[in-house]
Structure formats: C-alpha cells, structure tokens
Image (cartoon, rainbow, N blue to C red):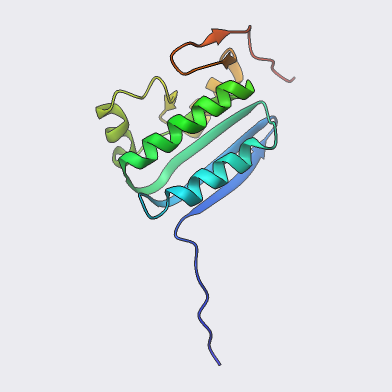
Length: 142
C-alpha cells in the first residue's frame, strides 16, 4: 500500500562551523515558501551563536519576499548582537538584491568562505538597520 507523504516546499539545511550557524536554503524562495524559510532562520537564531550565514547558492528562484525575510532576519540578528551575512553568488539571487540596493544591508558575499570570513572579522552591530552601532571588534577563536 502506498501512501502520500507531504514534502516540504523548501529545505533549509543547518550546520555549525565553530561559533557560526550556516543555513543553506535549497529550492525557490517565493510566496509559497517564505514562511518555512523565515521559521527555519528564526530557529537558527535561537541557538545564540555568534553569527548566522544564510547561503542562497542552491536557490533557483528568489522573489522580493525573500529580500523582506532576509531584512527581517538581519534586523533581529542586529538586535541580538549576532553577526550576519548572506551568500548570493548566483545571478538569480544576486540580481534582485542588487536591483533593490540591499546588498550592503544584507552583507552579501559571493561565496560561503567570504561570508564566514566577513562574520568572523566584522564588528558586531546592534539596533535598527538604519542605525548600526559599532560595539567593538568581533571575537575570534584560535
């Protein structure tokens, strides 16, 4: 007997590298999937890691709702004192971000390695997106 199994619309794979949570989003980011992605990213932030990197290199379609979710996550990360970066090496993701001029707000990097380096060296920011406060250099582990 065969039963139907409901598959998630999108997959967010979470790993940890030292004090950084890496959330790899796979599939499309649109009005059908943004709630799952948002929920998964907020769950990643519950770990209270020093930083969150959202890797979008396996995303096929990236709608404007994806930018809104990332801006919300970035703002929450700032409020928590968590460093944040987005990997957007694919044109399907980088182009909408560039067209909306949000690449600096989202701290976009081309590769995961660049994003990891950025969150490990970047000063912590707190507060509102438009009012970052430098609280000193990021801690690094030996």
